[in-house]
Amino acid sequence: MKRLAVYLDGDKAGILADSDEPVFVYDAAWLAGAAPQPLSRQLPLQSDPFSGREVRGFFAGLLPEADPRDRIASILGISASNDFALLERIGGECAGAVSLLPENMPPPQASGRLRWLDERALAAIIEELPQRPLMAGEEGIRLSLAGAQIKLPVVLAADSLEAEPRIALPLDGTPSTHIIKPEPARFPGLAANEAWCLALARQLGLDAAHAWSLTIGKTPCLIVQRCDRQATDGDPPRRLHQEDFC
Image 1 (cartoon, one colour):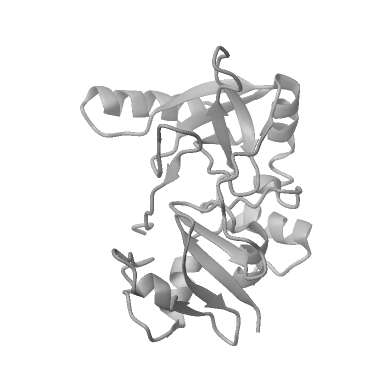
Image 2 (image 1 turned 180 degrees about the horizontal axis):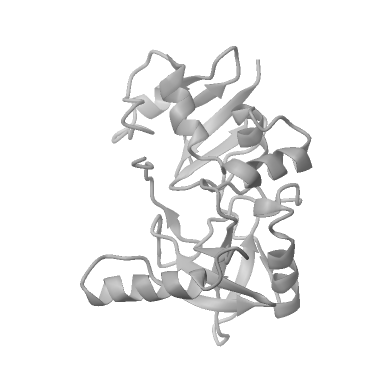
C-alpha cells in the first residue's frame, strides 16, 4: 500500500494511504502537540482513521481540474482519475500550508532554492503552460493549485539587496509568493478586468488580493499576491493553512 506523508507548514500532520478508498490518519505526535490543527472541518482531530468522502473531498480539492488535470496526468503517465498518484507527483506545494511527499523523502524544509527567470525564459514558460500546466514533470518542481484556469505559482523577490524584484520558480519545497494567471484566449481582456476589479474592491475598503496585469511575451497575465503566505523577517515566507469553502 502506497503512503504519503502529509505536512502542515513543514510539520508532519498525518498519513494518506492509497487503498480501495483513500484513508487518512493523524500522526500521534501531531495530536499530542501543544496546538494541533485539523486539516479540515471534515477531518477533526482524532486518533481513528478517516476514509471515503471526507478524505477524498479535501485532498481532491488540492488538485487542478478539467483540462489542466487531464494534461498533467498525460504528461506524468498516470490516470486523471487517480487523486493519490497526482498528489504523489505534484503535491509538494499546494494551497495553504499543505505539502504531500512520499514517506521516503525528507520533510519539506523550505530550502529557499529558486530558479531565476529572465524575460525570455519566463515568456517561454507562459507560452508552454497550456500544454504543460503547473510545469508538470520538470525536475524539482512539485506544484498543485485547484481550479480549471491555467496558472503558475512563482516567487517574486530580489536576487540581491540592491536589485528590483524578479520572478523565479520555487524549487524543492520553497514556498511560492505569487500566482501568474495567463489570460485565456477565449476571454480577451480578462487579466486587465480582474486587476481593475480587485483594485476597485480595495478602494472600497474590502480586503481584496493585491494584483496587477502584466504582458509576458505576447500573453496578458494577472499577477496575484498569495493570501496564504505570510512575510517573515527572513526568507522564505511562512505558509498559512486554509480550506476551500466550496
